[in-house]
Every structure is written in structure tokens, then in C-alpha cells.
Image 1 (spheres, one colour):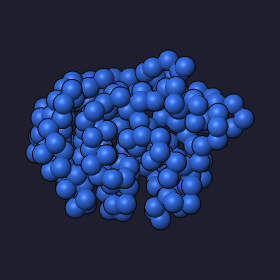
Image 2 (cartoon, helix red, strand yellow; image 1 turned 60 degrees about the vertical axis):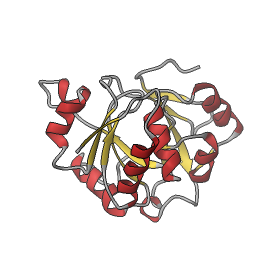
Image 3 (cartoon, one colour; image 1 turned 90 degrees about the vertical axis):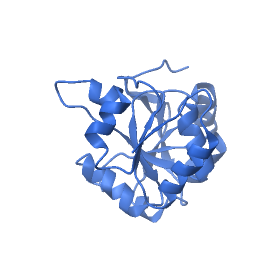
Image 4 (cartoon, rainbow, N blue to C red; image 1 turned 180 degrees about the vertical axis):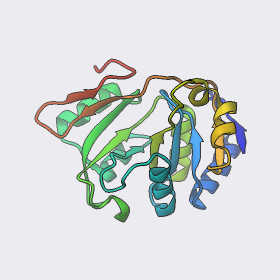
Length: 201
């Protein structure tokens, strides 16, 4: 199923419909400010494992990311010192994944994870979904065949390729090709461990 949403002003009724699917255990594909991504409720055990299998990831070793809608939500699931907070405040929302130490409030499925990747993308569709859901989404970027980029950027082709595997694909316009820049905030100094979209301020 393909749902069209406009990033400037996502339809609230459709956002509620999407979060209903997520609360019911569904897995979606949706736009961010970088690439399209798989997403599910972080408390949806089956959804998290499904995405890990789809990406051929070992849950015990995978680096998983959450999308939050604001910094106060981040503080529920991850530990931020003053420097990390200031860095995130300067750069988010934006195309960055910040690696932070996880807190004791992480869902049981993530209890063995010492760190978690946190995203607050500059995309109203993603942010409205998380805000309406009331807790973060577990996300992982969709991946492309070696010979094509259309199947990770064109929502109609994304739906053609993955629509039978997920509950919903959200058409939020053409997606990008650059992943987020990953910044490790767990050490003494922030360290960029993957260059991607955006320049860290």
C-alpha cells in the first residue's frame, strides 16, 4: 500500500492512520531528510527482528538507530552529557546520527546494547509520525541493488520492490542517495565515523 504525504504539511488523518498501523505491529517505509528507511515501533519485537532479518543483520551486533522528534524524547532513551546536548542542539533536526550511551529505559529488546544511534531528521513526515506515535521509531535505511538507484529514491519503485514485504510505503517525494553523517558522542570528543549528508556545526 502506498500513501502520499506532503512534507510541508503532512495530512494529520493519514499520520494517525500510519501510527495505527505501527501500533498494530506494522513495518513501514518512509522518507527522512536523507534516504528512505524501514521503520517500526521500538516496542514492536517482531517488527524490529523483521527489519534486522530483511537487512541480514545480527540483532546482537547490529547498530540500530532510533528516530525521535525532539531532544527531550532522546533523553528518555539515551544519556547525554552537556557537550553532546549542545552539539545536538546545534545540528538537529538535521542529517546526522548521533551515537550515545543507552539509558535504562531502552526496551527489553535493546537491553544488551550499550549504545544507540539517535536521529532527529529535518523531515516533517518522519517527525509527525513519531510525535503522534508517542515513542521513537526503530529505523534502518533501505538498500539498493548494485545496478540501480531508482529503487531507493522513487517511492513508486520502492513500493514495487518492497510493498509485499512491509505494511505500508509512504510517498513523500523523491529520496536522497546520501546517508546521514554518523557522529560518535560517547568519547571525550565527538568523532565523525561516517561522512554523509550535512556539515557538522
